[in-house]
Length: 429
Length: 74
Image (cartoon, rainbow over all chains, first blue to last red; front, side, top):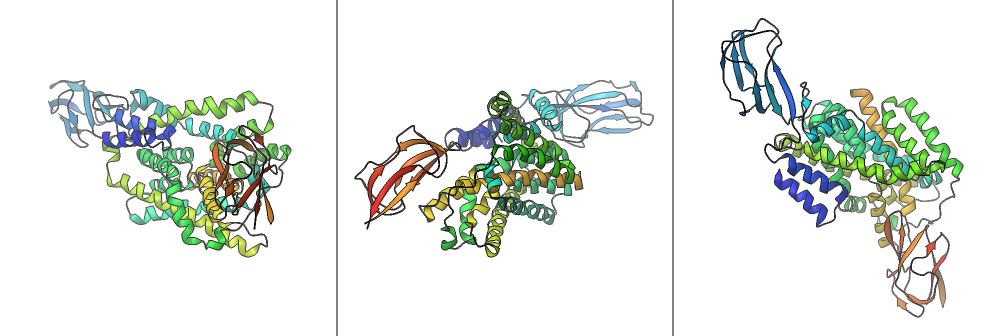
């Protein structure tokens, strides 16, 4: 794991791949995998059973020993007490021959596991993770900042692009069923894996923290890594599904001018509609639209500027450090984690394909042809996939400047991903 | 001899100009770099020809429709 963390840091610094994310995540991984660092520790109080426990017969471990899940810690008259999860025995609170009460704390275990057991975070990063992410505070706030950074003009100028953003979410559902099909994941884990296909980091983290927090390291790293790899993943799929002629379709760069009033009304109306239909998406969509309204209204420039710069930077530091820190060797070096990485690519790939195919279908029904490549920008890695489309478009036709046309599906996909997350939470949570 | 005017496609700032009047360009050559939406976007020549006019300079903020360059070609 130290090597993996080091590789991510290297990719971020030397190869400049998404350094804002890979450097803190990579270093968080390194920190937490250095023994006894304690940054991601959780404390678990082991209590004696509720039925009359009787006396302590013998103690099987010493303070400071590492234990695996199921190892026997001590023997009571009533039976064995074993470790419910792997970790390190920090303290044994009883001695042989001592009579213990039901429910009395008999030992304290320190673990780095992400577990539903009633652990309390005692490390720096485990506390940030617990109160920032597990309490679902940080991801929605990041979404607020993203809303303040997002211009919905290109989408409103060409509302058909909403369909492309929606179509790309097909990748989410495909990966969900693919995950279930492997037989390795339960429904909550599969949903957390599927949402990777929305290509939205905060949405993935938000959904995973609620449905399957023990795999949050894998899903978050998969999502952010593949967002950075979009220039590698998307072009082959786009080329596979389009003809040279389609890729060269020219789109006039000027979009309809979208008025300020429209840009102000949009977040308000969108919030109302989306939250009425998908209430579980409220924290994400609500925050997104508040941020968007900050920017569009023009009257709270201080708030908008802060959200676009300082605030999102602060949140990113908290988020990335704690996500990296969940990736201890015990949590991450499992076949499940590797399968998550595989399914992540499946999600991105099918999302790309779905967006492009929807664009081609739309072209059958419309006189004014759109360049089907912009469908790939429905994979909401903003602005990476729009950039991919722009560059491919220029290569196929030097006159083409598809960037603004690709931004429409790009931002529509952000809403689509949040809605997909809300749908999962509503149906499975 | 035909002429083609290359126009600014979206609002941004010109951060590099690669051409001057009289230059011969090939289709696909970079005419200038337009910074927009936190990205560096190259503006490419759509045809082989000769630059007869250059309408932008480095650090200029531009709006859609403004002329970047005029190319004359066969």
